[in-house]
Length: 320
Image 1 (cartoon, rainbow, N blue to C red):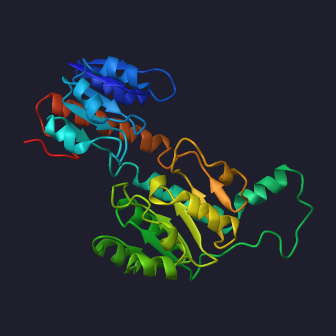
Image 2: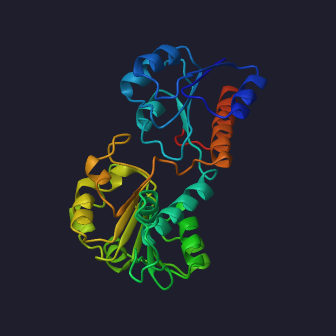
Image 3: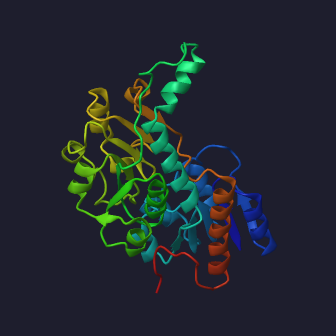
């Protein structure tokens, strides 16, 4: 049985595949695999371990006819046509839970960096412009008694709320369904999206990208934000209409914004690079040794199970 891995992942995961006597090949270049290479290597593979950078549309899925599983090394799976993969009897899996802590840690780090203007301060010091303490130098925002709005109250949203609560913030959230765990841990209150946007001092976005969530935070919704608001996004860039958010940032109609993801990733809107009231990160939400190793191991365990005729551990779709 052949397994193709579209990018170098944890050696522990590769070792686990080889231990199961599977024939493993890995795309070695440290960049997204070209589509032609993916087709060339994937057409004879019984399993593909993939990243979000690979788009599995109908055309590509038709060319990997021997594939029984696409194991996505990510929680999200908007890079895969799930409906068509299911039609073609291809199992799709993801890697939930293992990156919850790392991503919620980063969301909290972005909240703090934006609220306390940390990057502006670092740039000032590095540029030799720090001339000593001043009473009004880089005044930021405390989290105590502030309202933190969680948009998308899944695992990561819940853990981000727990962290914010530790800073004595009050929590509100928007989600399709009620989250009793979140409410019990933080005293959170479920509100409509409009109310969360209007009432929150800090917004943290944790939604999956779907047809329904694409540009969910559009011009109309973003206009509801307080002038003093901070918004951070560690989910998917396309959930926010980036051009509209940039307008608000330019006009100082919100306090600041933190980005770990971008609408046209890996391209970053050049207007963002000109702004001081932003924190820009290179999609590192799950970038810890623990999380990336855990993600890779879960992905390959899904592969091993499926190729052995067992049930996948974390299936996205259901194959009859």
